[in-house]
Image (cartoon, rainbow, N blue to C red):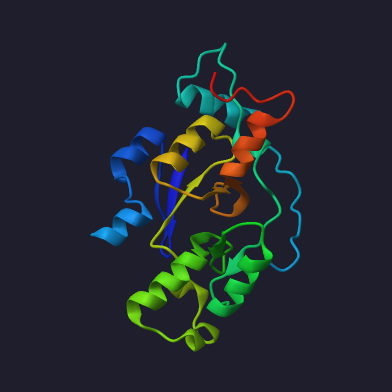
Length: 203
């Protein structure tokens, strides 16, 4: 299951197929041009096997189909940035982080967007703002419009399809309350299939 979160909360929650229908494929960055402090490891999330069974039924997985889920390979050490943090401090957190972008959360710890070097400097460029404003402007002013997320029991294959389709560098993994419990990157997926023994995510 995938969701879309923004400053006003969750705007979408449904299957991969519904996501494709609801959200057109985004332009790549080149196409558009033409027209952390020390990480705090989080404890592994307890996954309800009933949720796994319900997910298999939802995507019509056959009994013989081997599925591997995001909770098995997601990175659990990351930094959630409060929406009130300054954009300058957010840049420092990203610089200290192994990720190119980080989740921004509201006062209820619910994700409202992702912030990155690109999202900050694109806005500065478009609005001709001065770099000094980053120290007095909240990070929430520089997040991307909205963020696509996945649930922990989402299959790795379907997550990879979404990341490829929407040209995503990172995919936040959130629980039913919108709290970020992990982050998936292309590196996570490559590591999953290159380990010995590898996860057969394409079967």
